[in-house]
Image 1 (cartoon, one colour):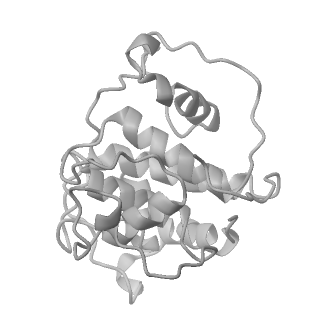
Image 2: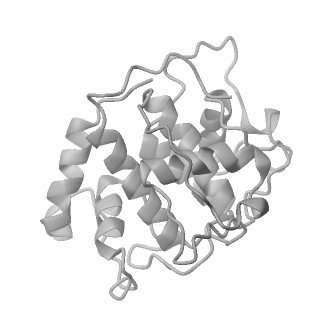
Length: 226
């Protein structure tokens, strides 16, 4: 389900230097990200419609990213959808997840994630914070649905690899190779770290940039990741 990214990413690049006020569809600028290191990435994603604030002018960059917010961001950033899937009956979120009602704002995103193979547990609490390893795992799964990307055959040592969930180790290795995640100065990933909204936005921006940069090298994806 490889998407047409050229127009989308070109728009992001233009929006980095454009005034938010000139965009008829955009929200007002966030007033609480002036000192955030990833301010430009947050603004670009806001204007692209990928991220939203808690209000028209507040992003709350240091708040923990909830599962509901994280899955919705990943779906919007990678543009995975249900377009290639035929249904006899419209699917509902509460048909797959025990703690998600079908009338909440993020329900459709969880349905999309499910049918595209993101291995989100059925009992996930949408209001619970996502850890760094969870968000990275789901983001890589979604990113790889946009194409089959060549990677360098190398193993990146992670000093706290023993703390990473075994099922996530492969996707986290690939996230490091894709450069949408990083280790700290001690070479640790800190998998249990509860991701902030600003940190998630930076990873999303890097993922979108990766897809655009490698779109000509990627083979079309023929199926969903399991």
